Length: 279
Image 1 (cartoon, helix red, strand yellow):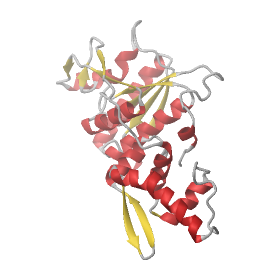
Image 2 (spheres, rainbow, N blue to C red):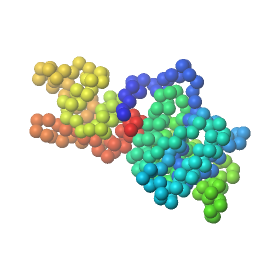
Image 3 (cartoon, helix red, strand yellow):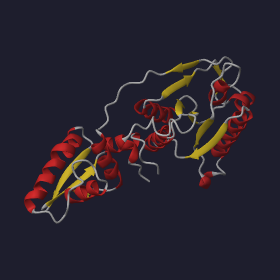
Image 4 (cartoon, rainbow, N blue to C red):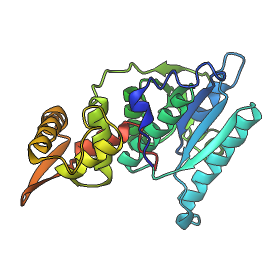
């Protein structure tokens, strides 16, 4: 499902005055307990109304010993957080698919911010690839990303059962410094996200932009004169496609009298990190 509305408004202002903002933490979870739970414990712990746990559970692999171990950690973390009065939602996805992690984390951030909520991302409670994806998503979306430092590591089964891989006796959290990433302008991003779903010809893009009443294309009509159509094609090329192609996010292919546009791999990452691809 695609969401276009936030392109044309400040998502941090939506519903800001209609209901109190909530604090939401997104935590991709691997084989950890302390790194997911410890920051919320104690009188000086993090406040959170809701935690979104990202789990790598796959129904087809429930009998796999590694998956069963992961399920155990998900349940432990969930119970510990709920005992602190925190609402917990578990989302299942492939945590070793970098693009999927970026898509899911960015989408969750996007949706929570649409509700006017404050979002944090814990990038330290899962594997390296997942940490990279969640960190990129949090930074590009402009939310606080944090790392929970370990005091030591489990070296026996008993410690693993209680703490997970990492042992955190003293809560030591480090916030990562966000870097600025310049994303395509709203009109270009809207088109790029649609190209994530399907290749389009120039004429199909003009119809798409018209249907969504995008500025500069709302007056397009397939029954316009050839001369007027050429004006819209030039506007599409100069205003949107040239920019996206220059950034390496799309490629154009000549197919007879038409030009087909397809998204590149870098373009897929940018589309996913936009937060507008929910599923």
